[in-house]
Image (cartoon, rainbow, N blue to C red):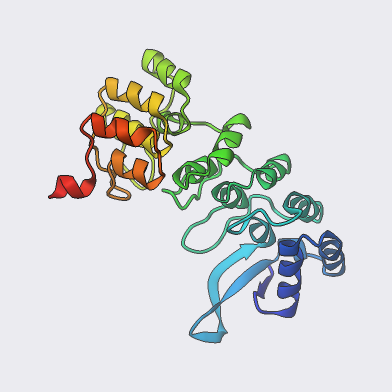
Length: 264
């Protein structure tokens, strides 16, 4: 596999073409440089500009890099895959997210659709969130348009996903027939006990500002002041973080507390 440093002339040119939406220049560079579509962009180590870094990304990661929504992003995906870009190639660094993970984390629905149309694996592992799927990243980072689009496109979703997205019918069916898997979110390696799974789902409903599903899950035995292991927040804390104006007064009326109150 070929590599190129991010500060080399060719890398600078192709990244600029992608981020400015200059599709003709992107096509010209790909045509003039066979194999460029699958090249990996290497970072420089900050303490030694001559040394290689182990961190690298693909040009499809460049398209989906934060904050996303670059001009003509979907067209850039189509051009890169036409020239042979591997749509499921992972980022190499602290995690192994695919371009689809990055599009989900940026709430870039048009690029997300283009990647899926090009064959991206909707269930690819590697999320920064517990090594999970693109849907895990989208929900964790409150990228709701991307999360809903992934579900529309066929992503497998667990109880906590449904809670965060406010899918009350799926949640009700789950409690009738245990329809949804109880895949545990966000950094916990062990499976939860059934009460914990309900509390996790309740926390996620509050994270998503979903009062109807939060009320239902509280009635199903969720712990009102359950503290998440991944960020130390209670349901009230995450509702306040995401400015859930309807949910906050209801939670407080139920006796919800912040983690700082509980620790005091």
